[in-house]
Length: 267
Image (cartoon, rainbow, N blue to C red; front, side, top):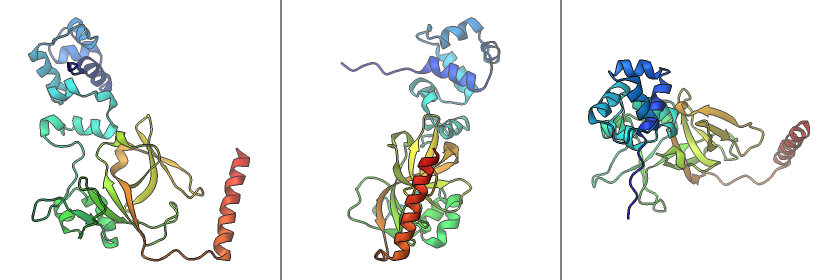
C-alpha cells in the first residue's frame, strides 16, 4: 500500500510569510482572511484548505499551488527561491529552475560541447543563450554515459595540481543537493570570466565551500546565488606528458610541505 504524499502547505505558508517579514495580521488583511483562519492553516489544524484559499496564497506569493503543496520550500537553495519568486516556477512555467541551453544533432540526440579558450570570456554571460551554445564545437567520447549533459572546459593554474593547458570534461549537475562533499567540479561563477576547478561542498547554510588540492591555496566560500553552473569532473585531458621531477620542482614541493607544517604549528 502506497503512503499518501507529504503535504508541505502549512509549513510553506509560514515560511513564505516569515521570508517576507510580515505578521499573520498583515497577511490575513492582504488576502481577505481572518487571522484566526490563517493561524489554523499555518499550524496544520486545517487539514483540507478551501480551493479559493489555495488560490489566494498562490496569487499572493506568486508560487503555483503544486509547489505550495508538494515542495518543501525551506529546503531550496537561495537561487531556487529567487527563481520561484521571480515567477519561474517549475510547475507554473513547465521548465527547470536552472535552465540549461543545449544543442542536439540531426537525430535529436543531445550534443556534448567543447568550450575553446577563445570562448572563455563570453561563456559566463552567454552560457544560457541557445545560439551561443549551438555555435560551440561538438565532440564525442564513447566512454561517457549515454545519459547526461557533458561539456569540456579549458583550465589553467596549479590549484588542483593539473598541468596548464589541460581540459576537463564535466557532467552537468542539475540538483545541487545531490553533491557529495569535496566533489571535483568546474564552477561557473557570476562575475568571474574564468572557470574555477575546485573540490565543492554544499554547506548547511546553502553556501559552497571551494577547496584546492594544492594546500597553498586556502579554501573559500561563495553564496549559492553566485554559482551559475556546476559540472562534475568526469575526464581529464592533458596535451603533454608530465615533466620528470627536477631539482627545482622537488625544492618547490619541499617548500609547499614546509609551509603546510608551519601553518599547522601556528594553529
